[in-house]
Structure formats: C-alpha cells, structure tokens
Length: 336
Image (cartoon, rainbow, N blue to C red):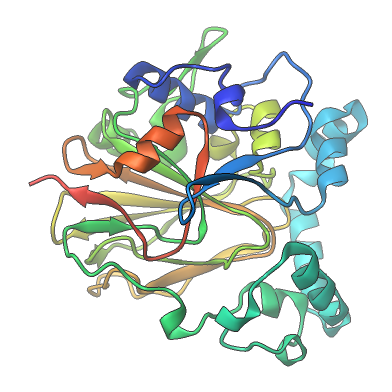
C-alpha cells in the first residue's frame, strides 16, 4: 500500500531549498507519479506532533474519478464543469439534505461543541451546516501584530523561497506563477517569495479569515474548472491550481510588504463567497469569506524577505507532510 504523504508525492526529495521549490511546484501542477497509488493521506497533527491518517470523504468516488479511464473521461467532459457543481450545490441547499448532516458528523468525527449551533437539527440544509459559524472563543487569534496566522482550519505546506517566475518545467512546458495569479506583474512581485498552501478537507470549518492586519483590495475572480484539490487528484491532473476557479485578493499589510491571498474552488464547491468590505481596514482573524460545499484550498503569497515560516512547518513540509493547523494559529512572523 502506498501512503500518500507529500514526501512520496514528490519522490522522496530531501530537506533542502531546491527540493522545497520542487515540492511546491509539483503540488501546484499536480505532476503525475509513475507508481500506482492508494488513497491513504498522512499529515502531522501540530498539537501532538504525531502522524495521523486522514479520513477521506468519498474515497471510492475519488479513486474512480482520478485513477480509472472512465472516471478521468467523466471528469474531463462533465465533472470539472461549473454546471455539475451548481446543480449539486442547489440540491445541498434544499431541506432534503438535512438527513445527511448527522451521519456526516459521525463519520468525520466533527466536534460540534465548537459550532455556534451545536444541534444538527438547527441547520436548514447540508450546505447550511457546511458553512457553519464557530463560537467566538473556539479559535484563539495570535495577537502579536508581526505574526501571520493560518487563515483557515486545514493542512498546511510552507515554502520559504519559490522558483522565480517558474514553478516547474515538465516536458518543455512551464507553469509560471502568473498562471495562478493571472497577472504577470504580480507574479514578478512575488517571484522568489514565500508561499503557503492550506488544504481544507470536506469535514473542516469552511470559513476563511485574514492572516494579517491590513487593508484588502477587491477580490479578483478568475473563472476556471472544478477539479478536486485532494492530493490524489493533484497527482493525476496537471496544473489544478492554475485551472480551477479562484479569487485573488491583494492585502496592503500594516507590518510587512503587500501580500496575496488566493482562494481556490474545487469539485462540488458551489461558489467562493467574500464577506469583507474592500478598502476597509481588516483585523487579523476577521472573517474574509467562505467556501460552499466540498474541499478547497487557500494559497498565501508573500514578497521575498518579508516573512519567515515557523520551523516545525518547514521541517514537516521538507519531510513530505502537511501539518494540521487551526485558524488563528501563528504560522510565520514578519522579518524586521
């Protein structure tokens, strides 16, 4: 059985800067592995420091969609398209899906004591539950103004230095940062900078928050496909984060240079909803928006020399593991 941690995903590259760049590039492009894989995803729980195995929702469906010829044909013709996600999203907003909530909570071992509405019966639909609010005291926001916090609950990978204007070269074709940002000028600004990728599983709290204090600009929508962002899909479909629907927001921070926050949609994610006010000062930990339905991802980009990721996150990433973090946890600090 092949355990799908990122070290094996990138064929065991060592803990050095070049390997880190290659890992980030291969994650973003979904470079294919030659080996057959099984759906076992390992990550490090930051609270305990121990490796855990992720409970995967829709495991057999993912296996079919991204490993079989018929599944890949379906995804390329139908599954990646907006229509299917909108249709499923509309269904999950109906009262008919209330019955899905309790089994999902049990199956995914979700702690409902953190939720603002603890009783599953109080949710009008599965989507209502999926976009649930948490109690204000369920997440502590790191107060140091020079710290960067995780914008979401999820599994994080960090990269202190990413490749200048080119994430990877595969069979003569490059995947530049400008493909993610859809903006050459911005890609030049962040080239050689630092990056983080936070992957949200379907069971996670799906609202995302500001990682720093600053003034956010208006989010820019980049239309695209709706592939899954599960690591198994990243290995079999090239350039997912460059192809999926996403929204990019520039933030003029108070303690460091300008940064970018990119929310990436995924299969069955009906939409990316922004709830903040562009141009108004935003506090670290304040809600920025939420994802509707499915797994999804947040990418953070910082200019070179502006921040330093925490050593445990760097070590885990270099060892090939995502690290489970909670929204509000400090993950980096400004370089002064």
